Image (cartoon, rainbow over all chains, first blue to last red; front, side, top):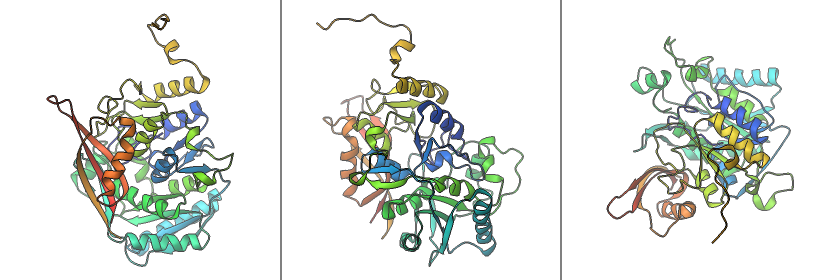
Length: 342
Length: 62
């Protein structure tokens, strides 16, 4: 299940609001591979042994057949803090980590601070999607290397993001429209670490607390319950699958050939995982889930090859049919009689 | 190491199927840098010559 981050999806473009859909697809499929944007609700999260938490770059490599996924009982999560964090904000994040250790039994440590501020920059692409960069990607990777060298098997990054209080974009997001302006830079941070270290990684942005907004959209509410966005990241990473080169995969590992179906928003078929699935002839279900993108199956000329679902509930039904080997044509009307080849 | 954001506008070769787009796009992106994160963000079809142009947004490592 892919719901690209930073494109303003009606379902999944906010604070983990695609999680209920992920829970349903996990039940329908028995094994759901999805990424942090789907599962991260800041202070809200859900654990399901059928759901495999795989960062977006890792998910692309998996779908392309380059990497395999190996289940683990526990990851040891290194905590990477941006040097730009103010002392109180830094302390809040350490306290969240301690809370997750004491109350949830998550293995966390060591903790490393980047040697210089990471320098997060936000931006929008021509499409209106959220993109972003870092001034000091080298500092991010050095800190990540230190964590891995000192026993971390997964990394939770906390980057100091620009506060944007009072902006129209933020107000729109809090009220349930527009794109998540932070998303693009967040993805770059985690992609860089996963690409470089080949270990599970996810990011939690550090921001100053916002004033109460009585008009807060329910989909954005998860991000305004606490001081940080970190708890869901730690929960997700705690049992995230290890990323293994395909050539080193064991019989119990998940590989791209095991993929039964990809579920993706209708306008988001231009991402690498979706294109990899089209390439490998993995069935694709495109779900009506509006965003700023319109790279649809029709636009790509694969309309007849992609299954259409009007909702994630319908997509779950299609997934269940595929899983049980029920011909989809038998579930729809009209059903045509067989014709012999001429 | 430097990260740059780039938008490419690429005519979609007529003999290239959608199922072969991923490899071709990666080759096009590699001309400009090592692609870290990328996606096709728009497809513009021409009514005149039945061709199409792809808009690709990417973050590249230089």
